[in-house]
Length: 321
Ligand code: MN
Image 1: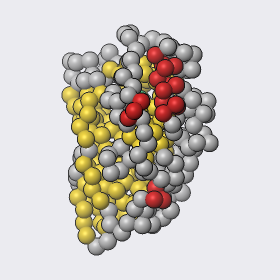
Image 2 (image 1 turned 120 degrees about the vertical axis):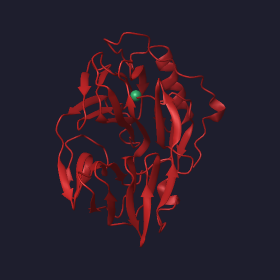
Image 3 (image 1 turned 180 degrees about the vertical axis):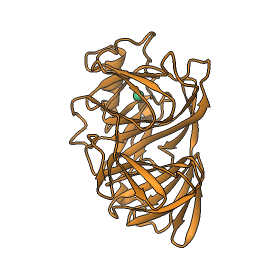
């Protein structure tokens, strides 16, 4: 998916923030639109730019797409990140400039490594199901990895583990020693947690990593230093680092997400669909896309025009740690 607004966002080195904070904090999503789809933007938020390498998180739906076109995000570019597409309901067709064409369904992972540059489209297929519900996440690539060759992976089956009455599907990184086969570039976790019945469980965390929990269907209740914090859809619970576990309770049918990782320790400059470090990175990417340079390639098979980059106000392109 694509961040359609011209959002200038910067991420402070985590070591300088509140990594020693004792209490969890709840943040509220911003509402945004991606084409015709309304999304809850959970990252970046003004006070919370990234969590480990996770620098962008949109949650959309559940929404009826019965009898309408549904998702339609025309070809657009990315640099410096990996996109993680995960569905709870529905189906989405991905095409990219490497020639990939891949349908994704609930429980499967589409992982696209943009590296130095890629373009893709995402749309509901013509014969799509009646409902759409999912998340779109970005992983920032570190300085040493951000010029990596573009790549695309689809994983139809992912490992799962039980924690009390909860079941976690590990789509990225590792949780409790269970690892996703998807290629990522730094130590992290991305897991979907479901509650087949009313359930609670304790998930182990890596104390040196920072973590968040959010609910796609909920609410969930998270134990935090003797108090209980409710996490409803549209909110994000920042757990910080220094924890070795988190205990979660959720009603039957809940779907939660646990995201975390080793703090990046790098200041990001995010604009539109680009993650860079300097205004020059962003200007060059925007120019290359507008000029249809080979860097981003061409998305074959999409019926329609590609997205134009929004106007670039270089004066606002300042990293704000
Ligand atoms: Mn995208």
